[in-house]
Every structure is written in C-alpha cells, then in structure tokens.
Image 1 (cartoon, rainbow, N blue to C red):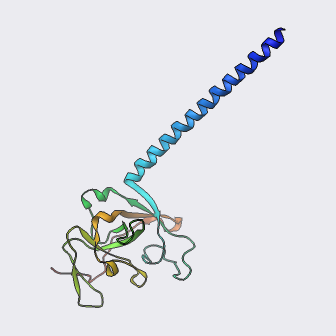
Image 2: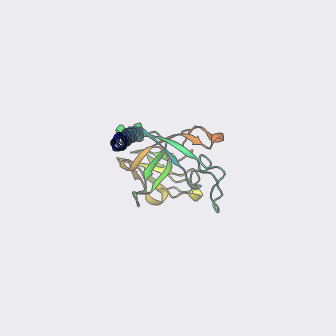
Length: 188
C-alpha cells in the first residue's frame, strides 16, 4: 500500500518539476529574445548592413558585375544613420535612399550636388539648380544607372543613411571614398 501511495506522489512531483523546467526554459527564451530584439532595434537605429545589387555603382561596388548575368557575390556595405540628424551630407558621399517612385525600393548612389548647387551635364550645356531640401545623386557607372538624371533631385527626407564601408566580400573590405566627378558642379 505504501508503494501505491508513493507512485502518484512521484508522478505529481515529476510533473511539477517538468512544468517548472518548461516555465523556466520559456522565460529564458523570452528574456533572450526580447534582449536580442532590443539590441537589434537599437543598432538598426544607428547603422545597418545592406547588399548592393547591380552595376550602377561599379567599380565602387560590385566591380566584377557582368550586366547580363549579374554578380556571383554582391558587395555588402555598412550604412551609418548619424548623418540623418540635421542632414549632414557632403559632396561625394554615397547614400542609401528610398526611390522617389517606389518608397519600398532602396537605391544606393553618390551625392553630386546639395541644395543650391548648379549641376552641369557631362555632355551638354544644360544646368540644373538643386532645390532647397534636395540632393542630386548619380551612379558611378552612368551607362547603367537610373538616377537624378532620370528622376530629378531627391528630397533629403528620402535619404536613409550614408555608406561608409564595404564589409563583404573579405578581399574588398575597406572604407568607401568620397569623390565627385570633375566638371559636374557649375560655379554659381
């Protein structure tokens, strides 16, 4: 009789330990998930890593891209977002922005002109003044770039960050240099 009384106690005790173990496990998972999510959210407010697709920024990004077949490995870049406070951009910065025609689409181009600048075409005498609150962006590979020459100046409010470094592939890791094509900025 003592044995039959002991068995239900043993199962109930085992079940209580299992329930506590499950609760502890679920609590640990919830805490770690929340912490990871909070850290990821915080980091994404200041920086992110994005792939660069296509040939529009070649040779700065994806230098081996064959325009017919694409690239086997897209460059991955570090995008810092501190520049968004007070719109601190410079000529030659490479920026990520939402496309003016499709806000869900992200593009990466180089800033050629800032508000008030006069931009001259490389093969024409036409000049365009960049309006207040806008920038003029172009791809480094003009033959394969859809940029301000097609859709005009980009509102600074669409800029999502500045590209500072290539972080992948390993043989291309390094800082992204600022440069402005010669003869594009016209004197006021």
